[in-house]
Length: 171
Image 1 (cartoon, one colour):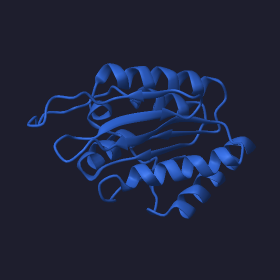
Image 2: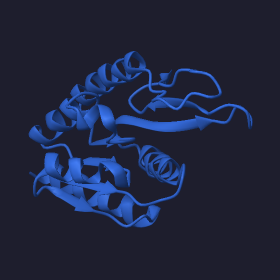
Image 3: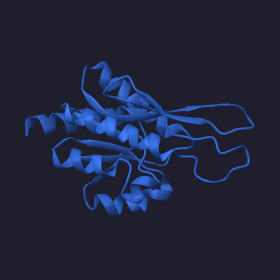
């Protein structure tokens, strides 16, 4: 009940996850998790990264402006942890599925969405995660033999989500 997508170009996996979430929400399915929106700010600066919380109306900025020449991680860990708290609360309200926008460095290090993924799985809630190639080995080590790779196709991923939701509801 843990599916993942990876391997798309810059911003493509974010669009895929948003499309899947939009389709499932349109069907009235209660979702927990977050999807990412990248807000372009111009050629001289890096985009802003916002997470839209799927169980409510919150949108939280998770990037910080470190300047045009910075090369360090722009993630705002406090923003991410705020979203994680909101997502955990949404999961506890009875979500049918957890969507995680990215299994990133915070999750590799045991923070971020990692505890919420474990919480969902232990409660029988299916989980869909986006993983970039650089973190795939760490994700697979975390997931052990539970992770199922999915094609980078919105129809196929949406169908997988619907099937896992039906299985969880039947259990």
